[in-house]
Length: 403
Image 1 (cartoon, rainbow, N blue to C red):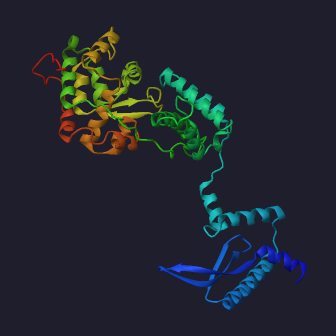
Image 2 (cartoon, rainbow, N blue to C red):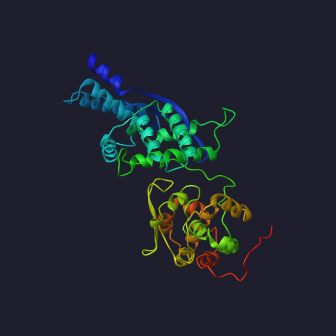
């Protein structure tokens, strides 16, 4: 055998013959096995009844492998030695699962070269600047902390280089208070929400800094005991009856917008009060602009018949003089948690109208959030009755809630 043939034979692999006992259907029987690997590292196994058959098959298989190796090595190619070695290494990694053509097709279908390149650090600064005055100051502080940690984790790479795998690895790296155990599911969800908000802003069509949101496909955990508090029909009616009588209904429009339009207190309602023209009674919509919206995304909320009655029956400023003290009094009297009125709006909306898409558009939540947290949190009867709550229904002037 020539020296080149010997080298090719080594590359093609050597096969061995040995006697073995095989087990099948509960029986043990003797036989002969030919075993080894081909030139790509693929495993070869062949059972034979006797030694002669095994050695004949081995000789034929080695000749086949050697001829195949010679054929491959003598084909002309425009690839460099390094490129050919890289291609062979990739073929070995892929095995018989995928071909190079399939891998290439997948890459070109899914890879998008960034139209605009910006560092993660600069994008973070721009995002937080855009959120000033849109979301609460303490939320800005939290976003700065989350994005700062993430920037260190990915070692300050460019924004377009971030992948879903990077986001998930970062979330898995979070630790609990003891510094050793994994962070709680709630902490995971909070950090994930910050990343999602940031990347969604970067991928917005106004910027297109990213083709898609890399945090969108990271999992969000369901937290044990996580519960959305919703007012019952009776409590919602009692609240509106009370505010209708409280100091001639000076806060009735405020609570009606919070309850029947789902507008967030502590931010959105206060900003809306400075732009009363956005309450468009002629077109029956409340326009929540980008500047007013907590998420920075505009939305429109339909003014349904009962909300229209509340808005036209009562007048005055949306936030009159001394509103801070009076709002605190009413919320304390009815034991209202911060977002319970908005939660009630979303729950009663999906409960009465049965449309994830419409509820998502008017609330500014995703359909997934609504499906996971608000579906079936109110009965159909309560939801339908909720949209009938209007001024002048109560026979009693003041309602005292049982403890």
